[in-house]
Every structure is written in structure tokens, then in C-alpha cells.
Image (cartoon, rainbow over all chains, first blue to last red; front, side, top):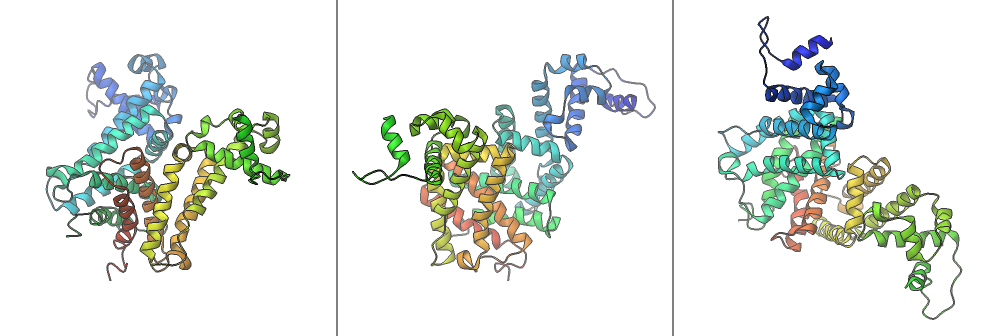
Length: 216
Length: 216
């Protein structure tokens, strides 16, 4: 079991092939991926150096060599998780703005479902006053929402004004609340309804802005 | 100074009149009001029994008599603050639904501005995993949002379905984010624009629901 997991963590991926010797950067990167996978069904508090060492089949000492201390280890894992979130929710390059938003919203829902415990512990930690988590969380949210103002992504939906930036911030908070609530208890709401509700909310909110297309 | 504050805490309020002897319940209630006022510019962590004793001009021992321990004192103050929030944001009995929502939203903004530090520490504590704060926070949010489904309050805006309950929950999260963000940095957005944005968002979101009036 430990040997298998170690193999996975090494991730040479060559079926029956010889092991490739990894650089320290590659090794560290694989350990971060393993940390992110362990966060799928665990809070950050439950992700210890001991657990990672056991799952990776390496010594605690080696992990301290790679990450320094538990705090730095957690920070690195959460940054990696946030990077994964940003990458996985990238909207398609082409298509209608609302269609792109639906794809991106679906990917966000998929991510939260697949990484629920870890994501929830990031949200809680950020909201609860952990400065490091807050910083990573805000960076991720900015990356996700800045896309909406970029010409190449959701161009055409929104003018870049203080009011529309504020609306998008509110929409992001609403999206997070809706997805976290729904994943824990969908009630009678289907997956398709939820995604349509979230994606449809952005243009609906924008239409309430003074001077928006909706008021013209 | 201390004597004056003590007088305030006793709050007999009779200009030049004789002091009324207060029941223990009345006395406790006044101490809670003082605690809530102290939270306006302080986080909950900064609200100690020592501070309340000093501001009320009474002994720490008497406060422990009234509240038991610091945890119970904090819980009682936050419950009082949540009750104040619910009372102050009650929509007017008559008027158009959107007009009532504007009045209620303005009152919420007023409350957050006047009680910023304490309110923020409630939100942070609830989000950060403090079970007692979470419970009070959820009760307050339910009280605020249940109004929207009551015939006598905002009747006519919303059908009471799983999807509309979810939308209102998302709208509440958005409202909180917008108000907390705006109070800290309004950017170029005026107070009137903010309130109009929040109140206008609810019907706009509802119109995106399947089977809503907006789609009929």
C-alpha cells in the first residue's frame, strides 16, 4: 500500500518502464499534487506532514527539507490548489460570452465538488482571518473575476467601471455561496438549473447598473 | 468619565430625577447594550470582561455574576447585536415591494456602517468555524431572508421554492460582500447607487429562475 502510493507520488507514469530520476523541483511539485489530492476529502487542519509522509512513502525529514515547516507546506499546497482552480475554470477561447460563462461556471462547480473539503477549508480560513490563506484566496478570486473584464475572455459583457467591478465581486460571493450550499444539499435544484442560475445572474446584475445596456 | 459611563450604563434616563432601582434582567440588558455599543469600533476579540467592567464602572466579579464567563458574555452580546440588526432592518409595513426592499437595504447598510468592527468580527467568526457565532449568524440571516417570503412583507416578489430560496441565499451573500467591501472602500460608487444595485439585484436574479415571472 505504502509502496504503491509512493509509486503514485513519484508518478513516473511509465507502465512497466524504468524509473526516471526526478529533479528536486519535480519531486516537490509531485508532493504538492499529492497534498492537493489529499485535500479533496480533508480540511487543511487535517493535512499533516505525517500524513503526507505516509502517503508519499518518504520520511518526515525529507518533507521538512522540501517545505521547511508545516505552515509553509500548507501555503504551498493551497497555492497549488488555487492554481489548479484557476487553470481548470479557464473559459473556452471562442464562443458567445454567456456560453463561455456557462462552461467556466460548470468547471468551477466540478472543481468544488471534487475538492470540497480542501476548498471549504480555504474559504473558511480566508474568511476567518488567516492572512496567508486570505491572500491566496483573494489572488485566486481576482484571477477568476479579472477574466470577465478581459477582451479575449468575456469581452462585451461588461464595461470596466468601479460599479461593475463591485457587481462582479458580489456575483463571485454569491456564486461561492450557491455552490457551497448546493454541493452540501441540492434541495430540489438540478445541476443544470444551478449553473444556469449562476451564469444568468451576471448579465442580470449588470443590467441593474446605472448606464448599463439593460437601462439604455 | 467612569462615573458618567456608569450612569449611562445604568441608563435611568430621568433628567435630574431619582435613580430607579433596576431588576437584574434590566441591568443585564443594559450591560448587553453597552457591550454592543463597544463592538461598534472593536472586534469581538477586543471586547473583554475587563473593558466592559471599566466602561460600566462595575466590578469584574459582578459581570461574571451576570454572564458566567467570557464565552457566554460574547454569545449574549452577539445575540443582542443580531437582534438589533433584525429589528433595525425591518421593512416598512406598507408600500411597493421594491420600495420596502430599498428601505430595508438602506437600514442594513446603516447598521453595518455604525457597527462595522463588531459586525465584521461576527461574519469572520461565523465563516471561520466558531460554532456559536455561526449559529447566531445563520439565525440572523434566516430572519432577514425569511421576510422576503412572507406575505406581509415583500409578498408578491417571490414564489417560495427550493430554487428561489437558493437565489435569496446567494443574494444575501452578495449583499454582505458588497456592503462590507463598499464601507471599507466605496471606490467611485455612491451610496444611492449601492443601495439601488442591491435592491434591484433581487428581482433581477429572480427573473433568471426557471418559470419565474420574468420568463413567463
